[in-house]
Image 1 (tube, rainbow, N blue to C red):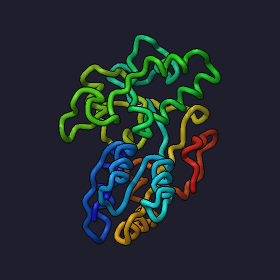
Image 2 (image 1 turned 60 degrees about the vertical axis):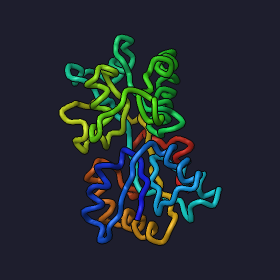
Image 3 (image 1 turned 30 degrees about the horizontal axis):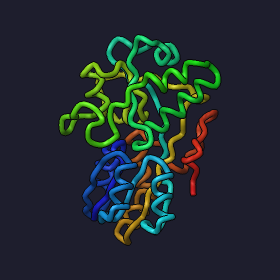
Image 4 (image 1 turned 180 degrees about the vertical axis):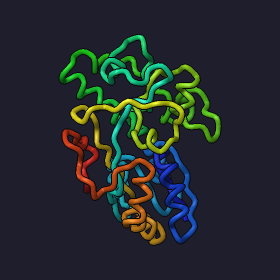
Length: 248
């Protein structure tokens, strides 16, 4: 069985693989590119996206049987050594600091980062607009999106370590899972944060069985251990889903 999954699910899927009774192979990448691979005819059994928009598009095209939410995430600031403990707004608005994000339109994390900037702009103009201009889209856009990332290395850790970013707008699950250790993270307050709803596109019967496991209590426990919020959990106060992250 073949699974195409968003890169932010690597740690979670390692736990799922240990718990699931059947074998499967997973390939990871920006969800937008994985969706395009399915549109171009690549065979897969299950598609796991960091938003609902990509599975929904495949559903409308008749390329998946169902599109179902299975997990949620929020954002945080992952910071280089020496920046830990500073206020989140002080960090994000400091023009001397290089802010890294993924490529909007190709990787949902970049889309969520832009929405985060929009929320800042609403209350603190022109900080959000300037963040959109100066943020560095370092990966998530396929070949040529930035420096080549060594195999097995977390991209956020790599780009901060290479000096390409001082801080990165990233999923909180990445920080909670230990994937970027020993880097620290700074919380974004609920009023400015984003609830990223993850959804699956079910393609085959085998994929549906794995999808059902992801939604089971055992599967949800694996996701929560990897830093995600289960779909049964309510949205934290002040955190709302962006328009393309509405359950369908």
